[in-house]
Length: 205
Image (cartoon, rainbow, N blue to C red):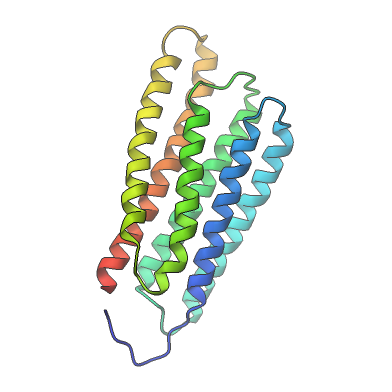
């Protein structure tokens, strides 16, 4: 554990927890949008609001870094973690927005499972952020997120296989593939966040 003799601004831990909590909201909104009776346009608006809140949380972290003399861990790692959390939200919002813009009445089989992966990864990330204060009990977090990313890869491949089975017309294939890829990027972004946390923990141990 690294020793410091200058007081460290611990506000960062709260800011990361805030940012991660917005991802929980975003993943929940995505899941609610998939319900048969969901108002998808309204869900997209709520998701856009969540994405704006995520942007504001990211900007708040960056402003804090730029105005703080001593940070709890390396500045570059703070930037990477903040950007990684923001990327997850951006991809989820883009996927939801695309579903509405493309007017996709029938969503691909497997999307609900993929969104469940997002929800689980979001919950784990939100639970992990407060533990950055001590850098303890984090290993299970990045191991589980890695497992979820592998599961997400399997679901992604299965969705693509069904998409290219010949059951869809060419235009629908293009639209649905765009949504599938955005969701996959969101899952991958969660793993990148977990990898960043692992690298931070190794440096600070």
